[in-house]
Amino acid sequence: IKILLASLISGLLGLVGGIALLIKSSWVPRFSLHFISFAVGVLLATATLDLLPEAVEFAGEHPEALFVGLLMGIVGFFMLERLIFQFHPHHHEDLDHHHAAPTLLLVGDIVHNFIDGVLIAVTFLANPALGLITAVAVAAHEIPQEISDFSVMLHHGWSKTKVLWANIFSALASVFGAIIAFSLKDLIIPFIPQLLALTAGIFIYIAVADLIPEVTVRSLRDKTSHVLALLLLGIISVWVLGMYLG
Image (cartoon, rainbow, N blue to C red):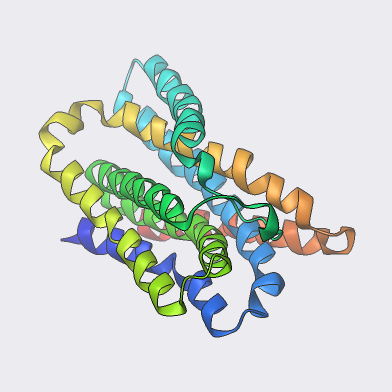
């Protein structure tokens, strides 16, 4: 039940940015850069301060295989994005340059959210506290992504109601991912150290390949202090949460 609740709440929290866009579009350019900066800190801290140490602890005397899992997470998610999310725009403001059909975008979101649900379930099986931290990390990076998704769908003429329900349906895919992962837990548990390392690789990839370039391109020189402060806040939040839950 905790796994289902965490995946559901994480998915729905990710809709916050998109719902804000529906309510008041002027909020998006003002706060989206802040969300992205915070998400970078959360993802990097979750990967390096929580997931990898937990993976090493589970691996015991032979942690070498974890580096293979880490590499597979980074390279594998890159390949997945190239194959599935090539029609999936990421946080760009110039919507005139997007040629993605909203339906393809929605399919990409469903796959992405399904994977997020699997990641949450895997980390919960390793350690419930780690599962909660992972759910927070997933929600943090979903917020700026959902802003982009809502923007593209609205730009292509979808009604606000249709956009909202489509993204709610997409968010529920994380619950199905968590259910399937939990159902296969007997097969998953022996590979938890490698899966934790793989999850860390995915989080590092999302932060470094997807989000940091967005911050670099969009942040003005006078906003550098804001970016750094929010990135550090994301790191500190994960550290404090880990200390409290641990």
